[in-house]
Image (cartoon, rainbow, N blue to C red; front, side):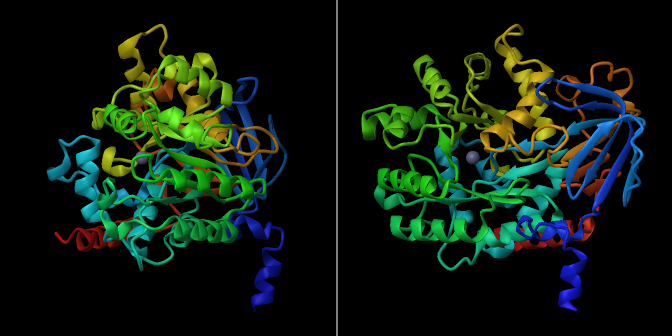
Length: 475
Ligand code: ZN
């Protein structure tokens, strides 16, 4: 029986994950009202068909003749490339909206929450990943990078649990082997039980890369190395992580320049500002991206641009924790690679990259309506910009022949969009879409249909996750 099953799915590349085995092999989206491709030429198509095979786009054009296993009538639909989330902490879904931490800023907030996070296990990771990816996909996101850095002793294979959950729900997953090696006794913030030695971290990092990182075109699973932040890890760990990442050809990620507290901490401990510290440890380059990047000075922005070091912009989290406003207009004009992100659910309280698009659009207008990015620039930041900082400009982030079929569709006839779709390129950021999208497609597989997840039973997932969350928080 096993052999027959393998024959049945033999046209799917084995390396690309279990999820594909369940995908329809061909998909035709007919008569799309407007397709905003975000391609190299900013092409916007009207009344076109899109045809995908084996998860890849094979044709975009008028009256495509193919039949397909799955056909979607999109005559009233707006079609966009799947949104790409460049920074999350999915496990934090189970520690959001907690009254006792709502008014804290970053350092106090972290100290309080580590007391909860030290109890996480494989089930917390599985269910929070399913919940978070589900919410992201219902709002048009198709690829999620997760920065997981809490590895309590004996908690199991947390990254394996994440990839299994992503396969189950059908999302493209970019996981990370995060790390912390400085606990309270070393002047860091976390308790002793969630930090590890540099040797433990590096050997597990190598294991996870070898086991899960798939460098192939269209990969559903990739891995980055992501020590938590310069104030929770040692210089040795940062330096050695960069060496290991480059040996394996994987990317590097951490939090940087999120708060003025961090800047003061680094100046006091190291005598240099955060970016200079990271640069000295090998942490700049086109294989590195930082979350937040709020408090860079002019010279540091030029260093980022020159070295092609990326920034994951997390507007809602930055507002919630009163961290500041990232200098996104300056970054864009200097050519710093920038992507969009939701950040962890404990500092966002939600997981909608679609909401982030509109909030970001409005936030930068507070400073200057002339310099602020346009609605379309923000859409491109959340798609091709995000794909670029994940090192995936080749296969995701825009809709073109040969690329992965990752997209979402929104019915232009919904009440909230009446009179608003004359400029489809900017409407997601300027007007905003608050309800679920109508369809989400990841690697040619429909994962959201008529606003609901179709890969998992949404109601029973929500029930099971709520029960686990209550047990974990012990309330
Ligand atoms: Zn974060």
